[in-house]
Every structure is written in structure tokens, then in C-alpha cells.
Length: 245
Ligand code: GLP
Image (tube, rainbow, N blue to C red; front, side):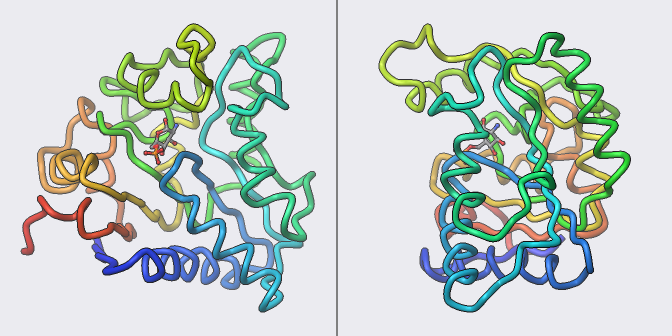
């Protein structure tokens, strides 16, 4: 596992975008696993900049997002569909038919999870999977206690996740979805390379536990210690509890 600690926001964004760009340029039809949340915002901004300023080409790239809420419309401002459109898809030359997210309002959530899993099997594995981390160690929406052998599934969000993500859904906490569809840990682990992103002091404890503590299903991100090709990109605050060795 390689751990990079960026000294500035610009350096962090550059490193993150470099790793994504390298994966895109390393395959004729690259497959990217993408994450949402606050952490990757600067990475997407830099990728969009490279597309407009340097012609970074997305036309043959296929993407799979890690997760999506259930029980909201695709166009809901808090949906990950909206996030991806606003942060990346609307600004680059990606073919939308090659972008895959679980649907937030399917007739049968279980069937939708199975459809997504099948697509991943058909087009995967991802050349690069980008991951954020929840303060409880979740990756995607795989909350503590999720089996390492899990595939894409309908999941219930942890109370701490609901609280952390509620601001996106406005002032009414009742409007925050309680369930989601998430790519499973077993599928995340099939990626050829994984880029784990973390920023800020609120992630320092969980980064220490996930990367340097025991590998346990109680800390979903700890499974990454078993992956042969992981790059971790932190700012100084998120890395502040990690031991050097
Ligand atoms: C969210 C998402 C994850 C994300 C994580 C961290 O709930 N489902 O995919 O990586 O939590 O979010 P943030 O980057 O906003 O801290």
C-alpha cells in the first residue's frame, strides 16, 4: 500500500487526477469505478479542467459508480446521478450510455442490484476504483458488519451516515433516504487498482484504524490491506494519526 500525503489542496487534486488519468490512458476502453461525497470534488474539478485545457479524452471510458440512494428521483439534487452529472458527466466528452449507476427509484431494488452486479461482471473489473471513506469506515455504502464477500446489494444506512449526509438533503432530516444500493466489497476488491481518498481531521482516526489496525468486517475499509495495489491519498490532517513505518 502506497500512502501519499499532499501538502496543499492543489497538490492533492493534481495527484488524484494524475492517478485517474493514468488509468484512463492505460487501456483502450478504460473502466473506472467512481465515488461521490465531498472528498473527490477537487479531483473531478481537475479532470474537467484537463478535459477542456488539455483535451483529456473520456470518449472510450466506461464508469461504474459505487452507490446510489433509494427512494428518490434520478433528478433529485441529492442523488448521486445529479452529483455525477454536475461534477463530471456534463463537462466532458463521456458517452452517457457507458456510465452506470444503480437506479434510485427502481420497481424492485433487489432486481436493480442484481442488474448492476451483472453489468459489473460483464464489463469489469475496474482498471481503477476510486473510494472515499466514511467516518465509521464504510466504503461505498458498505457499513460496519458487512461481509467482505458481499456483492451489490440493497443496504440500510447507518445512523452516523444518515447524519453525515443529511445536509445535502436540506433542513428536513426526514427527507434523507434510509436505504441505498451499493457495490459490494467483493466487487470493489476485484479492481486492478484502488485509490482511497481522505481529507480532513474528521477522517484521521478511521484512517489509522482502517490502514494500520486489524482487518475486520467491523471496519469495512480495512479489507483494503488485503488488496495488492492500493494508493492512499490524504491531506496532512487525515494522515495525522498514521504511523510512518
Ligand atoms: C458517503 C458515500 C461514500 C463516500 C463517503 C465519504 O456516504 N456513500 O461513497 O465515500 O460517504 O463521504 P465524504 O467524502 O463526503 O466524506
